[in-house]
Each structure stands twice: as C-alpha cells, then as structure tokens.
Image (cartoon, rainbow, N blue to C red):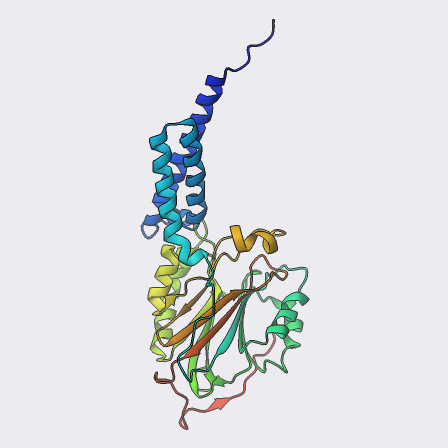
Length: 346
C-alpha cells in the first residue's frame, strides 16, 4: 500500500503558515530595533534593519499569492517603511558635493586592516595609489608594523595606540604635521586614538575608533567607558572628524549615542561596507552591513565618501573627501607651534 501524497491544499496551508511565521518574526525583530537604547539585544537587531525590511517585502509578496492578502499588505507596508528609513545610509551618494568657494579639499582613507589578513600588500598598495592626506587604521597589529614603516617617507607623522588584544590597535598616519600642543589621546585597549593635525593653518582633530561587537559583545560597556574621553575631545575646541569600524549601523542607538557624546553628526550615504570573507569584494557593496562610518562636527564639509575595492580585509576601505571652514576657531597661528613627530614602533 503506497503512502498518500500530500494534497495541494495541504502544501498551501504549510506554505501559508511558514510565510506568516516568517513575516511575524521579521516584523517583531524589525520593531524591536527601534528600542535599542533601552535593551542592548534590540540594538543588535537594529543593525539588520535593512535586511529585515527586505525579508518583510519577500514574505509579504508571498502572502499576496498564497493569502491572507491583508497580512501580505501589512508586511509589504512595514518593509517599505523600513527601506525608506535606511536608504540614506545604504545608498552611496551619486556625485561629489560642491565645496564653498575657496575651500581646500583634503582626503582621509579609513581602513580596517584585519589583524589576521593573509594579503597585507594590497592595503599598503591602496594607500600608495590614493595618497590621502590622512589615514585611519584599525586592527593594525605588530605584523603590520614593517609595512607601515615603509610608508614613513610619505607619511612622516604617525600616532600608534596599542592594546593587549589581538584584534585591536589603531593608527593615524598623516602627511601633514601634528600640533605640538596636543599630545594626542589613546585609550588603554587600543581602540581609540586622536591627534590634532595642521591642514594649511587650520587645526582639525582626527580620531579613529574601533568599537567591539554589539550585544552579546561589550559594545555598550565600551560606550560608557568612552564618555569622558569623547567629552575631552569636544573641549579641544577644534573641528572633529572621526573615522572607524564602529561595528554599528548609522541608525543604531549605539552610533547615535557615540555621535551625541562626541558632538558630531553621522555622515550619510556611505553604504554597506562589511561582509564575510571570501565574499567581501562581491557582496559587501550590496548586501553587507554599513558598520564602517564617518562622523564630523559642524564646520567640516563632507564632499564625498567613496568605498574602495576590498583588500585583504572583510571591510571595504572608505575614501573621504572633505573641506574645513577656515572661519572656525582653531586656526594655527604664530602662537601654535607645529612639530614633526613619528610614533615609535613597539
């Protein structure tokens, strides 16, 4: 006696139940992400808001076919709202913004090098090709030091901030001199560094940040520990430009908390920048997470943020083009000496 085959109506009921369950789970995760400032786990869900929105759209389209139509429409509306809320962060700017007349243009290259990268020459080659004014690096462990030293002729100003963990250590490289009256700041874990740099007579504080993973990681604990340091950064009185691997999406409560503490604004139109290796190069620009971010204080004109091809990291480099309002305080005058200083290798 042969086993009875599932009837089409049975398969339809199973498909409908699965689609409804998927839509409900995605909707709950999506809505919870808006309360990330209350529950850290919810903020972890918020980082996937764009992906959850796409999932809601797909589940909604499926429900339009297999019914109930009302549930499908609700899922589509919620998914469309989600995509609308994140598109400024997920879609890179189409063209270079115009700078005010007479404003000089500068460039900053932001890179997470990946501490365990097997191909390190690609990152060094990209720095040489782009020749930015300033470079901010994360996960620049001791294995990277000989290669970074090879850039010393082009980047004579270097500030290292090292820590005990293998996947931290941040570095600032600059073709322009550091200000002597700002010794810089470096936290003990090696996740934050800042230096004031002279851009043709205009003082600008460059900072780099590497936040740890969100919950169940210690991201919120790290944010609490950074509060005093970020307040000191604001008291320097110079424009601030922060670049780094924040392990946080632009719309997350974590990054909004960081921006508020540092007195900066989150730069939009950066786009996704991270995806698992070995798919970083192909998938990160389209399906990745936007966790590498740029923050700027008033007075800094962000003209363009362009993602670069992947090197040996699971993060895409970012090339930032910016200008500084010369009317702002912090202009380097005769009373402010500029000295050449190189950070020593450990």
